[in-house]
Length: 304
Image 1 (tube, rainbow, N blue to C red):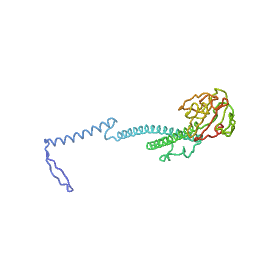
Image 2: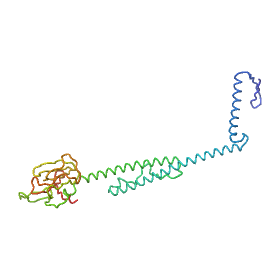
Image 3: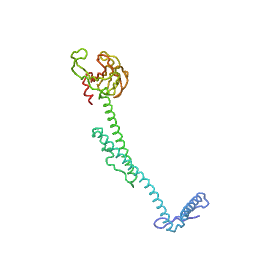
Image 4: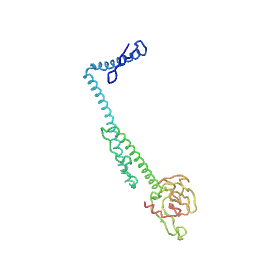
């Protein structure tokens, strides 16, 4: 087969001879024909599915309209989910606001320095955050979620620190001597100079005496650890408790001790039974308070 190919500006032509029986020629012609048939088949199937033909613009319009409708439906479903996420983020933001209010109340009630526990502060990266609103674009929601996480982390740290301060204060309060070692009864002898009730000599009374009846409960005035429970010269049966921070209390002249050395006790716990052992003229509790090894007037703690 002889084929003439025209090219160039002058319309000149060159002839080329192609052997139709040659395998390469047959392969090229076959590929071209199959490609054309495939394209025609695809177009026909697309148009056939929509009841039109390749030359029918209305058919193509219907195809494009349906695709636009599908895209709009998908977009609507995505927006619904975005709105749902935005609503949930709004609820979380409201919870954080309530946590902030609770933190402020606790700080006020506990009388803690609000400069150290300021629940109005925002994380540096979330200073411009605001509550999520419906119809927010997805990138905004991701940013708002990150800001909420930062706020939650900050509040968690603040509340943990505030809890530690309150717990430490409660512990400090519980170990500070406060109140009387007996349920009822007036003070019969005060702290300071006095005449010894047995010898009559002038001396210094290092505690307070609370008279009562034999076997009456004697109670710890603060939490602590028992460091002595037994006989001691002049004190009779003595219970001594270390409260930490340099404070020690003593309960003397007991009939018997109800605790052991090393035992932990709490404020108001019964530690002994009143008696008249040691240097005593009758059933009573001799109550002493020591701070850093020196006896101090227990009256300031009793009056609390």
